Image (cartoon, rainbow, N blue to C red; front, side, top):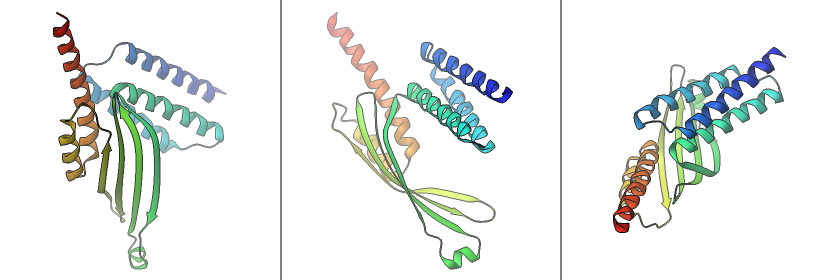
Length: 190
């Protein structure tokens, strides 16, 4: 019972923190540390595991609130997501304790007025000492918008197979596009 009460207090504190974050958006230099703390909390919670369906429901609620927080923070909303996993480990690799897995991901979403669809593959190779992963294929489909300059960012991210670069560029591009639009509108009115 005490554990449930503690979990409830943690969730209430988290909800209050998210509300405060929505009311008072952080300065750009503060965002990075808040996101890092958020991911550390998720990793700590998942590493503890769960023992019942109630723990799983709590975890789901926690992850949903984290997703909501990140969507508010970045302006990026993921609408659909799917993943397929394929084990590429051969018999020879298994004998050497090497595991090779290919994950195919597909997601769609939007960042303010820009709609996007991503398809990418991640190849993971794990041996006794370490796990390495790399994006092996990245396809980005953008709906045509009035932001023609965005295609340069998309092409560069696809060429480098860099998901982080895509999301970061998309977020900042859309943010600055909105600022420019409001500024020009302000001058047109005057």
